[in-house]
Length: 114
Length: 313
Image (cartoon, rainbow over all chains, first blue to last red):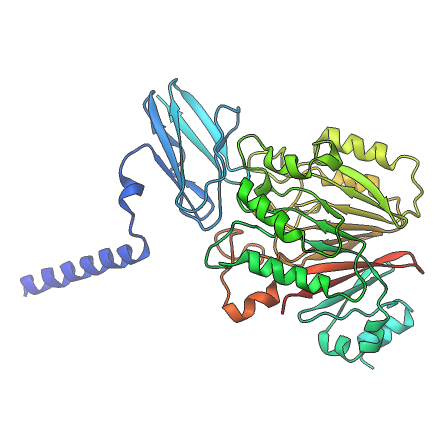
C-alpha cells in the first residue's frame, strides 16, 4: 500500500516535470552561463543581472521581432538584433548599468557589476 | 437606402464615395470619418468613378528584410501594393511613406526597397523614418538616402496643391520605458513653420509612431504630442497620419483627424492582445486582407481630405 502511494506521488511529480518541460525547454545557449540575458516576449531576462567586474554580458534575441540594447548613458549600443542574434559588452568597472531597447522603449533592464 | 447613407445625405457630406478591393472603406468630410461597408460601396460604383484625383497615397511599414513566418515575402507584398497604386485610374501626385521602410536598417534592405519603389508611376516620394530604420550603429543608412529633404534632421515641410505637409520624426529621442518623442527643438521648428500661416490651410502631418496615445504599455504614442496638438488646433482641417501599429485606428478631435495605416508587410495584434507588438501570424489566405495602403484626396467644398484604405485582397 505504502509503495503504491509513493509510486503514485512519483508519477504525479514526473507529470508535473513533463508539463513544465512542454512549456519551456531552455536551450544550452540560454543557460550556459550567468552572464547571459535573453530577450523574449518583449522582456529582458534576468533583470537585474549581477556579474563580477571584467565579465562580458551577452544579450540574445529569441523573439520574431528585432530588438537592440542601448545603454542609458551611451556607454554601449547594439545594432538591431534579428531572431537568434546576439550582442556582447564587457563591463570593467563596478556599478549599476541601465539599458533599453530603443525599438521598444518600454523594454528596460539593468546589469549590476560588483 | 441604409441609415448610414441617409445620414450622409442629410449632412451633404459624402462628396466622394470610396471603393476598395476589400476590408473597410472610409470617407472623411467635415472632419468626420464614416466607415462605409463594402457591399454599399460596391453598389455605388458610379460614385466611386467620380472619386477625385487622389492627392497622395500613404504607404507604411514595408519592413524590407523581414522574412519570418508572418510573411516570408515582404518584397512580394510591397510589389503587389505598388501594382495596386500603379493601377489607379488617376495617379496620385505624391507618395508618402510613414516609416519602417526596412526591418533592420541594413544597407541591402534600403537598396532593395528603393529598387522596388522605383517601379511606382508616381515618382515623388516623401518619407519619415521608423525606429526600424534607425537601428544601425551610426544612424546613417536612412539619412544617406532620404535625409536631403530635411537637411538630415528628419523633420521638414512642403506645400502641394494648397495643402501644407509636415513630416516629423518621433523615433530617435526615445525615453526609457516611454513613448516616442518629438523633442523641444522639433516642436519649436513646427511653431516657426506654422507661424503666420492661414487657419484655412489644410494641413497633413505625418510621422511614424502614432501622434496620439493608442496604447501606452506598448509604446503606441508620442509623449510630447500634446504640445504639437496645441499648435495644430487653430487650423480648420488637420489630417494626422501615422504607421507603426500595422492596423487601422482612427480618432477625430475637433478639426484634427488621426489615422494609422495598414502595413504592406505583416499585421500586428490588437492593442494589449498577446505578449507584445510583434508580427501576427495569420492564415496565408487572410494575410492580404490585413495589408494595404491609404489613399487621400481633397474635397474642395468643404475643404477637407478624404481617406480611403485599400487592402491587398
